[in-house]
Structures are given as structure tokens and as C-alpha cells.
Image 1 (tube, rainbow, N blue to C red):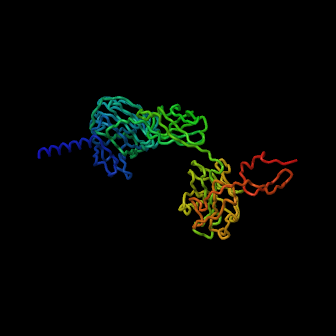
Image 2 (image 1 turned 135 degrees about the vertical axis):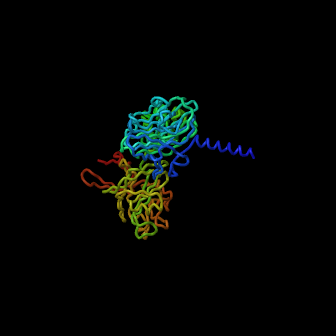
Length: 528
């Protein structure tokens, strides 16, 4: 029985020690009096409706604090969120005590280490607090980064087994884009009793404008894993974005020679780490990226802990869309009387290529009008998207992927000519349909779509279109009901030619022509 009691007491002591050594505080319980318990000027603080610790002191030229038990001092990591709704100064700043020998942070005899947010230089720096004299700055953060009226930040400090301190800050407040403010070795104090927050404020302009949240103190586990490439994405004809799984060292990440791509691209001419997302690097190559797949190899790019990637690779694809890579393959020109689809006009596009195609900024057009720009949209290989006016999106989205455009061109029931234009204003595909293409007298009266039979043969006109056979009257968002191989093996026949004036001739063929080849002057010869 005595043995059991001793064991139980020992377990309790271990649990208490662990609890005091490391803790996390999100103030989600709505107070700071329990789990853990904070002490100090408790009337100077409150937990607000957003479950954040907020200052509540309304005394000018005051210094106030709050602290909680914390014994972790070595091989440790501290992380917390802070927001100061003012531009700090030498009379308005915050000290976050990572380690403190006493709960009262205002005593000159209290020793430890703290992060000062603000001061004259509008910086985030690490200090050592000795029992006599002024605090000693041991990591001098970048000046001017807090020179705004609303400062949001996430701060992380690590102390490894060799007593090397590192200070990181993320001004997005998320903890996803840390920047290293510096490192220093200092082993002056190796014990702690408290973690705390001390505020120095002057006038009423600074009252209740200090916020803190998501405080975590834990054992430091060193990062020994190099960064990994998450993705490589083509942005333009010569630009690639490389995303890693963690923030990168700014020096190594911006060495262009650390990146090499095949297919004649070589190393980029510039590599720039994104200022707001330190896991992202923008590469600009001197040569245009060729169509197809390319491989990027990365060496020597390090994370904030100095771990460098070796032979990391990522595949990226680029494709400049060609004519007929995207085709208009279904048209709802006359939705009434309704058969089974919404009473709205629309067209469907299909990607006939083996590559993703960005149709952002494309348009639909008729002879005398154009739609608004297509929204951001990537059309995947062998997939479909319905294009319609904004008021029809809800109804059409029930059938498949749908995007809307302003000024959707009205489609004539009997006949019309509609173009698909790229963002470079080039004709990708055009269809000049008539109601004879339904090849069904009942269906051409309304409620049925025109469907293309073979999307690999997009310019055959009448011979490659028919009315849908689907019971709904059409197949928006999916393969056409009449889909089949319908190869055109017959060359166009010149039916007639006539002179419209003394300089121009008009030629009439028995089927639509390839617009590029039809525009080559050397394909025509006039005798005499």
C-alpha cells in the first residue's frame, strides 16, 4: 500500500512538472484565471469576444504585466500571436518574457530573456534581462517593420541544446511565412519560473490596443529535414512558381543557379522568394518554356534551419493552345418548348487536347458583338464546361461545370455564326449553324440542342452535327449523345466564284474551310 502511494505521488509530481514546463494558451475558455492561471495586474486585462487576451489598463504612463508558471528554459521553443493597434515607440512597446525568475516582471531583480515588440526602431528584438543595469539586446531585429498603425504578427523563438537562440517573425500573423531575424549563442540563464507579458504605454491613444493569443511553450525539436518541393506551376511563357513545404532561407532560395530545368531551359535568370509567402519562389527563365512536360531540379536551397535540398525534382507542364484545341461542341439556341433542360440559352465547350487549357479571359463573339471575359477557369483534357449568362448559372450548374459571362450573345433559332476567341483575340473555333443541322423537323422547333458528332473533326458543318438524342433534350456537362467517329475524308469542292467588284472575288465552297489555310494567298491562282 505504501508503495502504491509513493508511485501515485511520483506520477502526480511528474505530471505537475510537465504541465509547468510546457503549456499552450488560446484563451478559448474565456478567462485567464484557470488552465493555466495567470497572475499580476488582473484588472489590467480581459479576454475579449474573439477569445484573445486584450489589455484593459486605462492609466496614462503606466506599466502593467501578466505572468504564468513556466519552467522550460533550455532546448525550448516559444510561439505566440500578437497584434498592436498602434505604431510603437520608446514609450509604447511590449516585452514578452520567455523566461523569468519571478512573477513580477517589473522588478529590476527579475532575470531572464524577453522579446521586445516595438521601441524607437519599430523592431522585434531579443533581449537578456540581468539583475542590474539596462537589458542587453542579443538579437537585433530589422528596423522599421512595425512602422504602421496596425501590426499583426506571429513570433517564434527557439533555443537549441547548444544554447543557440533564433528569432523568427511572420507579419501575416499566420505562422506560415516566418523570416529569421537572427541567431545568437547565450547561456547566461538556464532556469525559469514564469512566462509573461509586460506592457509599457503612455497616453489614452494606446489604451486597450494590445492583443495576444495562441501562446505555446514546448520542448524544441530541431529541424533536420530539408525542404521538399510541393509543386511547380507555369505562370507564363517563361515564368514558373516553385512552392516548398516550409519557409526558405532568403539567400539560398534566391540563387538562380540552384534551379535547373531540362528541355533547353537551364537555370533561370532570376529567382525571387515571395515577400509574403516564404515557401514560394518565382523563377523567370531567359528562354520560352516549350510545349509539353519539363523537369525542374533543385539543389542547395535551404530552410530556415539550414537544411538544404539535394536533387529535388518537380514536373511542370506548359502548353500554348492551338486552333481547335477547344471547340464549341453543343449549342442550345432554342430552349422552348422545354423538354428536360432549363429554359435558357447556352453553349458547351470541350477540350480536345491532352493538356490543361486556361480559358481565362476568352470570349464568345458574333459578327457585331462580344461577350465579357471568361472568369478564371482551367479546362482539363477531354472535359466540358457550359457557358451561359449569369442568371442561368444556378440552373445549369446542376448538370455540370458552368461558367458565366456578361453580355452572353443571343443565339438565333434559325441560323447564326458564333466564335470562340482566345485572350489574344484569335479565333479558336467558330460554328455557323442553321436549323437544318438538327436533321429532324420536330426537334428543330425547340427544346433540343445541336450536338457535334466528332469533336476531332470540328469544321465539317452539316455532316458533323445533329439534334441530341438524350431524353432531356441535350447533354450539358457530359459527352454528347451522338458522339462517334465521323472522319471527313472528302476535300472541299469549289461551287462557284464571282467578282464582287473590280478588285475582289468571292469563292463559295460546299463545306466550311480551315480559316488559317484558307487565308494563305499562295493557295489561289487566277489565270490571265
